[in-house]
Length: 475
Image (cartoon, rainbow, N blue to C red; front, side, top):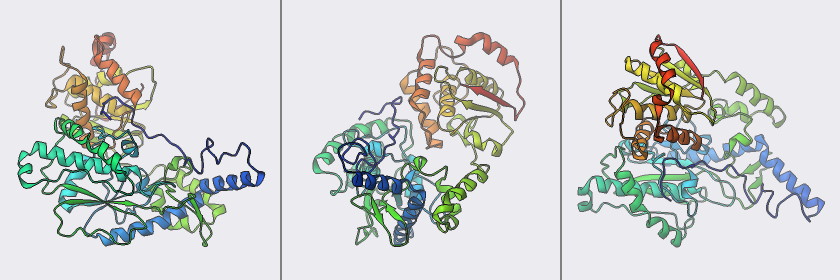
């Protein structure tokens, strides 16, 4: 699949087809007996029960900890979002990965420059590999993110490094594609392998920095049925140990004698069953949650979610390529930021408008050597779109602020490069299709930017903001 800056790559949120779908043989409607309907209704009830979900996750974390102990010198990483439920923060690194299953779906294979996961390479080089944790629902032993997306990533990174550093070819640099035969057929493997060169060329031609790794990357796989873990000592590669945390069960649910029903891949799609609970809250109150009776668990979760809403957030991300003049954060994290900069707060989104006004204010403040913190609900969508517009309009190809560049070249490639600047510092950035469409329309129309709202521009330039002032907008 060709990588486009403006494509929509978000995962579809679906339930397991064999157990939850209303469009297959397990439908609660149709010519089935009342007893069968009751049984299926009970399966659905058990699968959505948060008590079952949390205890299933807890069972899977025991296996993850066994793997972590087998590779004590390798950092343990969650593959967001699901993997964070299975990795205890006390033993895992704070650096997450962002490998999406959709990039490994059949005929949708992709190396996406909007989520290149290059932030992992320094850690991999420093620690000689990583252990990466994810899970999948019933029907598969290994999620597509681990069986195909990660292998694609390894092969593309290896081949792009060989392109950037031609001396690698002389030492037999291994840039072949490796996939698990039990999960990926020979035909599918061949189809993916035929696309690696194209993706590697796109990465090597990008603005991303690629470190000169000592050894190539190599994916390995471990599941709860693995009898012997791979031996990685003295190997001529950097192991990416992919751990599928959940036990594969045929029906998706398996009852336990301890009083709960085990659900494969319980952490998947936690917005549908979690009642606001997050991986962070799960681990912070792990023992309390697991020791609470089923009947009292919903009330406990409601209390935890409400009282934890004001917990400390993360610091804003500085865009280093822009000399630190622009920063991104989530609205909830504003209270934790350094108020020596002019803060721009984006509160809501309107699909019919564009990031015009915030961009003009950015020009005014950046021109006064003010640092500007841009935020939205997540810090990764609308805020990134506004930062992208600002980087295109007011910063040259080297990231140097130069004000409004009249007649400067703007195309999809210059936008791609500036989005890469943002992603390099904040890997979780993932602007939505609507946000990127608005950026595209704003910048690539004949009359763009401040020229379209010159009257507004004149008013704003006359206003001076003191450090720490807030400006609220509805885009």
